[in-house]
Image (cartoon, rainbow, N blue to C red; front, side, top):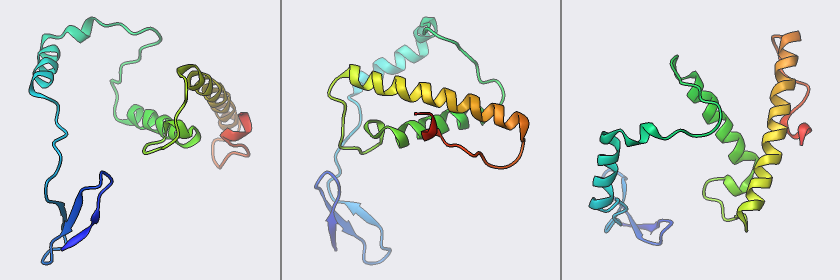
Amino acid sequence: TNYGKNRSGTQRCKCNECGHTYTLNPKNRAYPDEVRNQAIKTYYSGGYLDVIYPGRHVRNMRNKSDTFTVEGGNADLRHYIPVLARRSRCFARTLETLQAVVEVFVGAYNRFGAAKHAYRQRRPTGGFPFALVDFL
């Protein structure tokens, strides 16, 4: 049974027996074999290990709590900056504009984090009487 179209405009169908939706002719979105093979060679050669990025480096030797923190920061970026939201139709016209927006956000985010840390030192439980938008 026809069941509308997906985001790319391809016809979707729905199975009458199980209700599963599927696409008759799905598009192949895989990387070409030569790109895939190049990536595998680069990974196994260890060439990327010599790349040193500027800034502070912290190895995650503990558990998934660091990943959770990073994902929380990414979610905040996507929430407060529409340009970085997934499936967003808005975009920054120049790289400089995006950099300026991110710099303002990072400054406010750091001030918010410092205030939150100081507040937790005094009152370890409960919510905060302020929010990130108060630091913009």
